[in-house]
Image 1: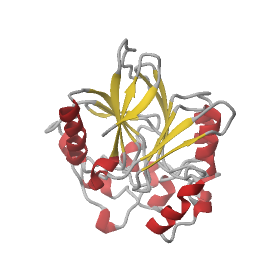
Image 2: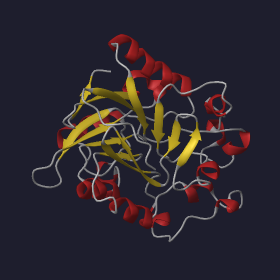
Image 3: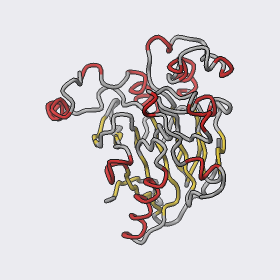
Length: 281
């Protein structure tokens, strides 16, 4: 996918958003509040999965989630044109998505006006930035499959069979060779700095640091060497810098979910020289 926003001669601003879970108006409220406060316009928005673009009740049956979490949400307003996203939004899939809908376009596409799915593995170029996205999470029992089940089989097998990326997805992402921004749903291993491990374990006592994230996400970071990695999934705001190869530093930006407020968004300034800096949200 190559929805191009032209390169620029002055600073531009863009946003990243954590898990939305169908709360589209909460997302808009957070982003519009920043625009109003800082008197800047966002050029585009990147969203890191669990967007939940349910068009109608039937889509809910194709999502992996307990029944109590299967709610239609607010995307249907935007799909039916009752409402409209004021910026171009580009999202990847998480582990709670209507894949019966999204897998109709595995290479990505426009799901409604100003809203684009990047696909199971996707690419877009925005303001001169090369953005690569990987949908889904790592599930060992799915990863080595040559293909996910056809969506015609949804209903006859577990919806969990559709939430993971597979080996060929990683291979396709590696084929992009490089990226300025990498969008992941699940964190990579080694995301958390050693000094922060204790505070994370206090936040979530059941958390085992050695199994947090996945090695394939780390592989993509190490190979593609992005300036910025965006991820969600944990409903936790966190920042770090990692260097998996000499002379390269990657900023890691992990985001909360929109019901947690401002921790769900990050605002970035893109300078004409390609530098990306996070600014106050």
